Length: 88
View (tube, rainbow, N blue to C red):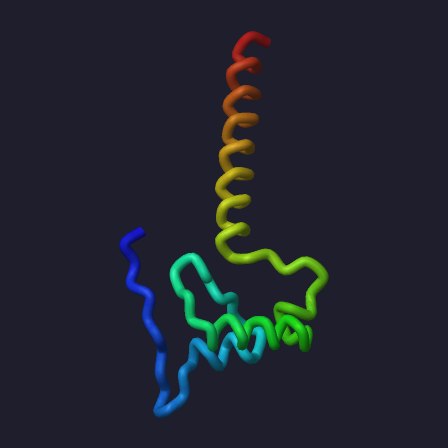
């Protein structure tokens, strides 16, 4: 995707790490291999903090993939409906 992956700092606080520790973010391991980020997410999951307190949290990349898939399926059904309604 040619995106920049960066770290957000506020004074001396790593906001990325802070969000992971609080269970407010996912560690996207495809682009980042930081052990401290992995450990922070693991601890938040274990403590069932925020997003990890839900029954079946969905990773943002999976949500987007399913949203696109569902949108395509809806479009196909819509197109078929209109194609066959022409013959009524």
